[in-house]
Length: 151
Image 1 (tube, one colour):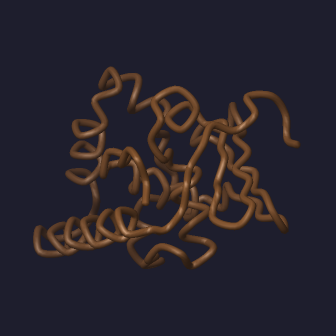
Image 2: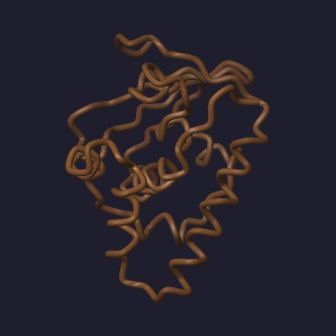
């Protein structure tokens, strides 16, 4: 079980990373590029221990979107690709700066701008909660990764 849960909005950022094909999976690590592609993060794993050097995992102590995205790609978390692709091309780096790291406000702005009905937006929120609940149940440990280069 995880010590500290991520803000639920980080799941949207994980969707974007998957939709934008910003994850390169290797045998025991992955490279995840930021939404504006100015940074890259390393997520590594050994058994049920995951490490990442993304800012949330490294500095805030919760599972950041790169780890969430990798866990989705590894099929350890639910992934609805149809929903993920709604979040393609979103520059979360810029949005999070604009909303002064208020992830809920950034996510609301994105959700409000999606070209779908209110019913579909409710379905997105339901899926978001399903993934967040799955994160709570994961039998993994997430730690700070090497804040330097790969391995």
